[in-house]
Image 1 (cartoon, rainbow, N blue to C red):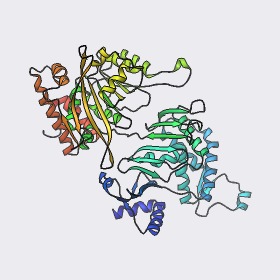
Image 2: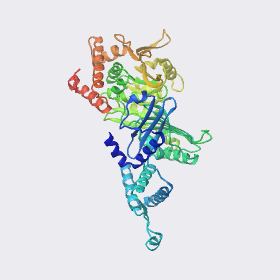
Image 3: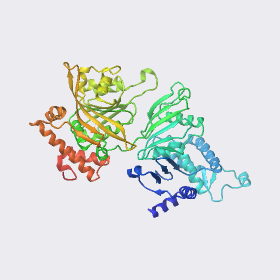
Image 4: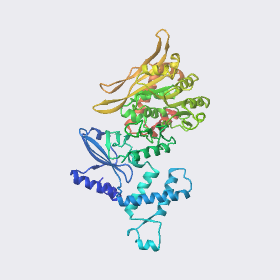
Amino acid sequence: MATKLSRVLERNPHLSIYMQEYAQRTRQTPQFMDTLSKDIGKESQVDIVYPVGDPIFIHIHGSKDEGQHYDVVQPEMDEHVEKHYDRVVDKIFVLSGKEKVHVTDAEFNAVLDGLLESIVKVSDRGAPSKLTQLFAPTSKVYLTDEEARIVEYYVKRNILQNGVLEPVLRDPYIEDIHCVGTREINLYHKILGMVETNIRFNDVRELDDYTKSMSERMGRPASISRPIIDGALPDGSRINIVYADDVSVSGPTFTIRKFSTEPLSSAQLAGWNTISSQEAAYLWLCLENGMSVFVCGETASGKTTLLNSIFPFIRYDQKIFSAEDTLEVQPPHSVWQQLSTREFGPEDSKVDTFALLRSGLRSRPNYIIVGEIRGKEGNVAFQAMQTGIPVMATFHAASIKRMIQRFTGAPISVPVTSMDNLNVAVFLAGVYRSGKLIRRVLSIEEILGYSESMGGVMTRAVFVWNPVNDQHIFRGMNNSYILEERVAVKRGYKDKRDIYKELALRAKILDRMIEMNMTNYKTVNDILRAFQKEGVSGLPFTV
């Protein structure tokens, strides 16, 4: 590690200077780590540096009692370099009009490289004398090698990438980013919880320009007349912007929920006890056999994460149709028709989730996925289930009772007698244990049907979470309506109780993935696909 650190410091002199100054100030040397362990969250004091891609590093230090600080370490621009940076940017905007139109980020990067090469002249001697320039005028910006690297970093960070937020958007350990006016930006770190950063906007104007440019990049420009914007950044992260200062008292604000380029797998979630392997096996049987499943919970309870993790349970050869406001679902299927709403433009050109779902009913999918049900589109989702097309969605509800109340009330207004078109509802929550936020599946509920004599919808909790010992309890053994009356019947079992043997087998397969550390999303998807094609003989291990 010492040899590796020395190479890192050699490539990034700004990190070397930062660590030396920190050691002189505090008489402590941060520990350099390539990746972070969850065990770090158990320590009362942290002092670590980790990379998020040269030349950016993150330094987290402090204690649980006094607070932990998240400092971004990146090349610094002094006034001299900043003047050169401003000149380079001005020239880029002048010359870029002559460049061919780019489509991808890679093409944009190539254009910037070409412009920088034509504008910047690297010279150890610096700029030529004023007398020389008088007789031989030059349009070049003369920089030392180190200055050129700093300018290039900021040009690409601010024009091609995400500006001041680029470091935290690169960090795979960040879950949420909170900016309230010009105060310090706060982050929710997956291991350490809420931390305060050294990133901030200098004034309201800078923040105003930044939020406006982000909204324009999403194709949903913020303005005084449209001050609240929901959308997704180019990397898929969900963002909510409140732009107008007469709406947001502290000035423009935004919240970003980070997007994972690769979803978490069901095996990873089972390994963390968010869901048990038996619960995951239950959902595996349900989804493989065309049951409709909704994932419910409160805000930030992990609904979309769980939804993405269980998509591979749907057979690999099925057609998936998805309809969303903000693109978040990531099924791994090759036949995936992905549609998004269009909220802006003339009224007759707007397309909402309701319209997308109606279109989906005509496209003959095997599964319809609604990123999140909020309103009248919920009624169309139930109509789809009535026609025999299974539906998956997320929904804000903390319990089965509240879920039914919300669906049967306005504005969704699903007839209570139609609620049994939904087969299974999963309920999650974020709970605190030993001062740390964890996500848990609280229960898995089966919807049995409407009972006129009881005057309501009959449901059964087949799984419940015991908070005392942090265990998931299976109450549905030999008592599951969905497994026995729907899945077992569809699979043609003579003895419906044999379905529980299949449940145990699949739970064991998931346990073996965890034991053998074969838990990343792609690996799990490959294993599930092999099992769907060849059964147990297709598995890369014995069970």
